[in-house]
Image (tube, rainbow, N blue to C red; front, side, top):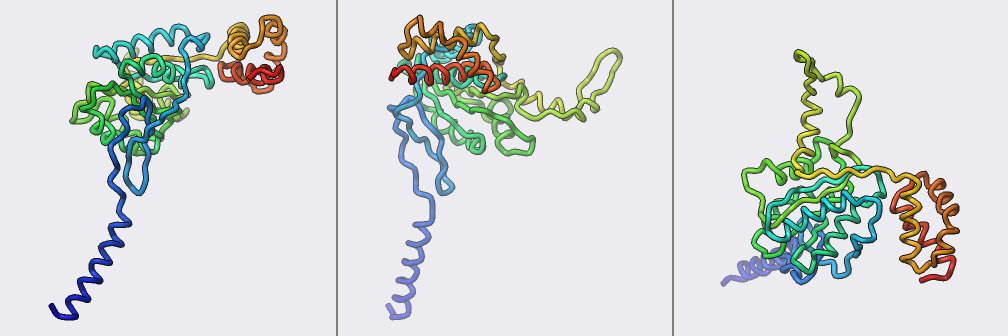
Length: 288
């Protein structure tokens, strides 16, 4: 071997080493012992990152949404038992328990094989990769997409639409999508879109833009709607959380006026606001 060839090979090996260092590392196998996961992107690659201490919420602690709770629990129970079940879209007022319900079903059914994968909106383009990764696992996976809202041109919108119902590949039997949004159709709706509607006889036919927006939400088999709580519901939830934090009945009853003032300051009567008030009130009384 000539000196020139030897020097060339040394330089080539050094160059390959630098290139390999820039490439994304091959992700290791996920920790399948966990009940909850996040999809994480690093250096252009994605992997399932185990969440060993997920936010645990008991379904019994979610007040004022009994009908929604019963329907999502029934759907999840069917799924865990290997029976047919639907993808779920939870929409409506903020702070009313949409995300908490999904965390609650994980807490109840995690020991029976249910798993939760949280995917950010920007990573929804990776849904096919996620489904392929878990398709052969024995567990039952809910892909959790929180607080969704799209523009039609976003790539995540198209990926979600295909996974729900529209791809040439069938969706794995052990995967469902549970998504929350403040928008019923997951996309902004504009007054000008109503001008596209056409009258055919006595019927009104929506324009193409409206039809496109509706087509995504229609791919969810189960819709759950959430509404702002009235005053009585809000106060009942405050009382529940005050007891949860160890506040006795007498001071809890006396706190009603403070609870109302708290909601006025925040411009909302919701389960989240009630929980925040109870934490503050209990803390002032020295409760842990």
